[in-house]
Amino acid sequence: MDKEVVIKADKISKIYRLYNKPSDRLREALLPGKKKLGKDHYALTDLDLTIYKGETVGIIGTNGSGKSTILKIITGVLSPTKGDIKVNGRISALLELGAGFNMEYNGIENIYLNGTMMGFSKKEIDERLDSILAFADIGDYVYQPCKTYSSGMFVRLAFAVAINIDPEILIVDEALSVGDVFFQAKCYHKFEEFKKEGKTILFVSHDLSSIAKYCDRVILLNKGVKLDEGNPKEMIDAYKQVLVGQYRIPEREDSLLDDADIQELANKAADDAGRSADGINPDTLEYGTGDATIHDYYITDKKGTRTTAIIKGEPFTIHFSVDFNRDITAPIFAFTIKNIRGTEITGTNTMYEKAFLESVKKGNSKTVTFTQDMNLQGGEYLLSLGVTGYEREDFQVYHRLYDVINITVVSDKNTVGYYDMNSKVTIE
Image (cartoon, rainbow, N blue to C red; front, side, top):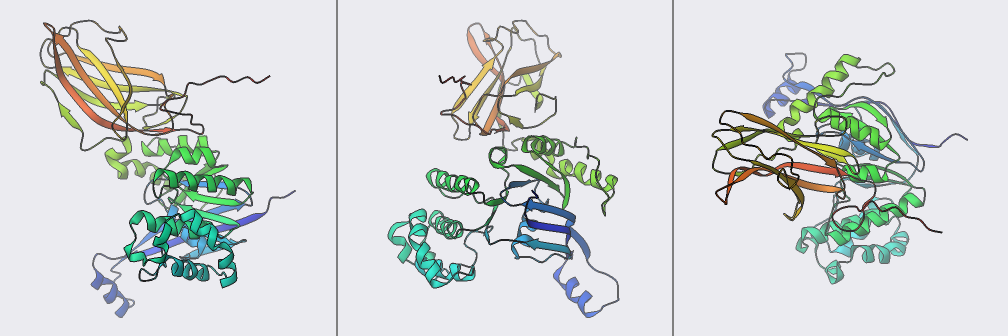
């Protein structure tokens, strides 16, 4: 039995005309046929997209890849410059939460305003009002003008309105991380309900853990071009390669862009992202005596690819080099990993591991690697590095780099606490 297509994009391009200054736009409009003062920017180029009923499809890519643009075209917020788009089903879109809200109206009035804009009658909104209010859970503030709301209350109400209209297709753009942790849990629970009900979900997220957990299929975009699509694990690996300029395009059918053009766009992503692609913190705290210097620090995954996104359960390696500016007896090399709240979760050093107990002469260098399995829960973490030692029983810090690299742990199964015990379960 053929699968039912609910979204079909055929050779979609979106072109914006860019100008160095506003007056150039006016001059070009008033003097057609003269010298062109602007240039075309392709937000999307020759994009084909097919989404089937009941699928959960994720779209990933670096900033400026065209992820939000294609969602806006699907929902009708934007029109494509070229190509055709067909949608079969009622859409609820979580793009810019609160767009269309009147800040002078109270919450109830905005619920009816937004419901009407989505095509619902007053009776249909009446039937959904209780569930919207329960989901938003902002109490009597719903009777106050929205201009008096905190940002958290505002997004809660906007999310509640958008997600409680019983859509056939749910489209989400980075909206599942709104509000406090309890509201986020409620949002994800609703998301899972939609999946169980067989609804079609299309969403954009930089949260690779959510992409891995929820998606049946993932589409990888870069610079407005679809580089590839496939299962979540393969596409997350490909995205990590894009970030460090090591992506190689697969064989593909004929396209308006040839393979060399697409490869150039993929390689340029790493250049555009700069040091941020390596997860390097530009505001790293560093201190020490200066008797040793840490440099060339990075992380590799099990394939040896430089990355800061590690799949939970897989091995990874922390690398750094140390130059010695004077003779040091038995230096200790160390790393620690914190969560984003600053709590130290784990770490080790060469003294604990009994891995290096030698002296190092001035002018020498050492390359240090720590290899281990990633058993932390999915989420964001910060890596710190250090070179220390003892001199006549006094502890010395030669060089420390605090929160130097951001690590993203990608997981489709999280347990309680900070790390996974990897329990083996049997039930008889």
